[in-house]
Image 1 (cartoon, one colour):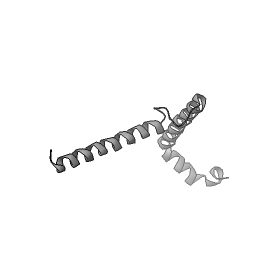
Image 2 (spheres, rainbow, N blue to C red):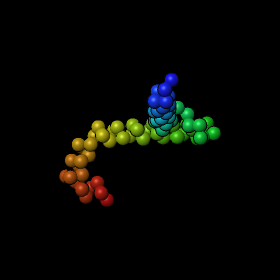
Image 3 (spheres, rainbow, N blue to C red):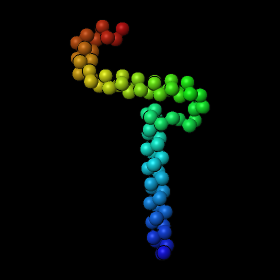
Image 4 (cartoon, one colour):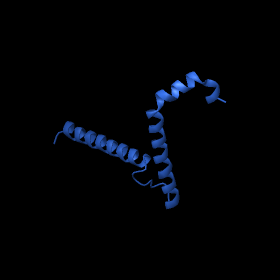
Amino acid sequence: MSMNKESEMIQQQEKKQAQSEAVIGLLTHRGILPDAGIDDEKVREARKEKKKNTYHNTMMLLQHYRTIVWLLECFPEKCCQ
């Protein structure tokens, strides 16, 4: 096998490894996969629940964004006390 082909195969393997690590990191960050850095199961579950709640709170905010902006424009003294 030529040097170019070997080098190309190594680059492809490194690229696949980086992509795999990125996917695992994303799934861990979202709480789908357990975080290996957390030993305590209760702490792991609490963090997973917090991430889940944060995601759903963000979705609710985005779904009601127009109404919230309108309220802030029309009634700034009530919203920003």
